[in-house]
Image 1 (cartoon, rainbow, N blue to C red):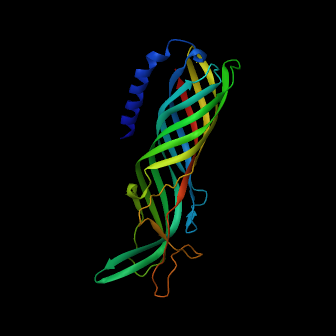
Image 2 (cartoon, rainbow, N blue to C red; image 1 turned 90 degrees about the vertical axis):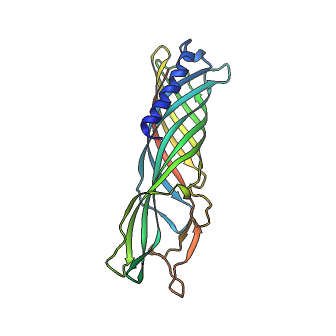
Image 3 (cartoon, rainbow, N blue to C red; image 1 turned 135 degrees about the horizontal axis):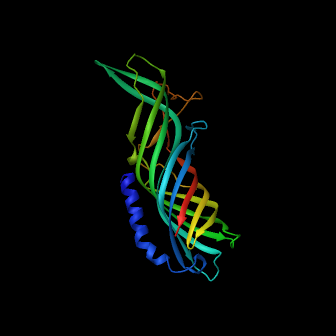
Length: 267
């Protein structure tokens, strides 16, 4: 599903929802819908020793979706906030790497590191408890906490190699847009903490601005038996056993995080 198709789906859903929303003031409504756009900055936190984080390297992403608030009590200050958005995010990890290159009848082994940049896309469903202040002039302020339940739609990677052992000049080249969906978990769960404000533009129309912290707590990699890293020396390149062979280490394990700037409109 490409960006244009995503946008069409969002607009259609909004179109079906608008007639239900144009009946009363925001504080009197049980339910309201809105549109949001969310640029984000993501990174990946390694959970095993043989992964290392790529310095301060992070990856910019973007999300677009529908917001929904449900007033579950008589008070306008307590809301259940949900919806869905299509979000891309990622980050970088470095691991020890080995590649075989065939030259005529001879196989050459290259040893080094792979600085891999991950790019994932998810359909994300936030489920949040939103605590909102009363109106302060045209403004109201809120804090929301809950979980993100995200479902992967695609995953790709760019590989940037640094070779320490280079037996020939046939050096393997960096690679882009590698499909790694078969190595990534389908579901991602995260803690979502969002703080923000709304400004009443006119009638039932409110401009929404939020800053969200999305702290993943599930492994982004799946349990595929081959989804393992090589044991690394202190220099980061693969460690070798007594026979000169690389040593297979732990299963890949890491969690994804991102900060989002959420901009939207409630109708």
